[in-house]
Structure formats: structure tokens, C-alpha cells
Image (tube, rainbow, N blue to C red; front, side, top):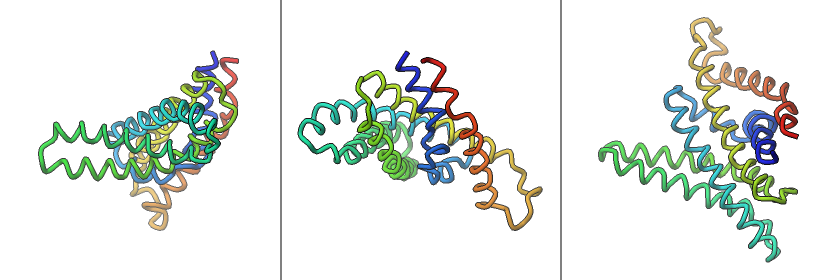
Length: 198
């Protein structure tokens, strides 16, 4: 039960993008089209989950006993970037030569996004996360929250008819207003998901 509590709390109650306002650049850059948002949001989900799964034992059994727990952000960053580039290298093997450069550019964008997301993941590890199942639920839930945010924003942004938006608000301003309304919606349901499995 603690796994599911941590999973849904991290995904919905403490969503990295909308509740903690970390990684909004990820949403704006990645969520162009819904088709791309599924792939790139999924890659970020895997990177966040891997950073949490690998980073928590490193934090608990290496960094904290040695007294260098302040290095948690760096460990999470290195793990998530390594996972992203390994996934990108495997995906680039099956692509034609002209598409490989595009895949590697996407990996660089995702690695920068993972650098932003590594900080709250490391803060969650350095908090009072005492068991691996809570850390696992938090890591997978954080990735799921980023995935939900990217995909939801892409679908909503795709449905906005730019012709109906006043000229001053077209482009980035309407995207910021949409993101603000989505963040308000996530904040409005905060506290509900975490209490389901208590």
C-alpha cells in the first residue's frame, strides 16, 4: 500500500510540472504534437523512474554513509542522462542515417529536461524516504506525472484553434495561460490521490 500511496502522491498530488512548477520548459518544448508527446513523455517517464530506482540505493548506501549526501542531485542527473542516451542510442540503431542526428538532438533535449527534473527527485530521496518501495513508487510516480503533464498539455494545445484566439495572445501567451489553468486544476485536486491508499 505504501508503494501505491507514494506512486499516486508523486504523480498527482506533487506533480513535478504543475504542482511544483519544475520542468515547464519540458512541456513547452516537447508537447508540440500529441504523437511526439507520447514518445518523448514516455522517455522522460523511463528516465525519471530509472533515476529513482538506481539513485535511491546509491544515496542510501553510498552517499549518506560517506557524508556526501549533497551529491544526490549529481547522481540523479548522471543516471537519468545515461538512461536517456542509452535509449537514444538503441533507437538510433534502427533509424536511417539521416534520422540519427534528429534522434540524438532529441536525446540532448531530454537530457537537459532530466537535469531539471533530477533536482526534485534527489530532494525526495534525501527527505524521509526510508524504504525502497516508497522510493520506487515516488520515482515511477514522478515520471508518470511528467508523462501526464506532457501528454495532457499536447492534447489541449492541439485542440486550441488559433484563429479564435486574439492576435495578441497567439503562440506562447496562450500556451502560458493554458499551462496556468492546468496547474490550477492539478493544485485543486492535490491531497486526494495520496490519501486513497492510507
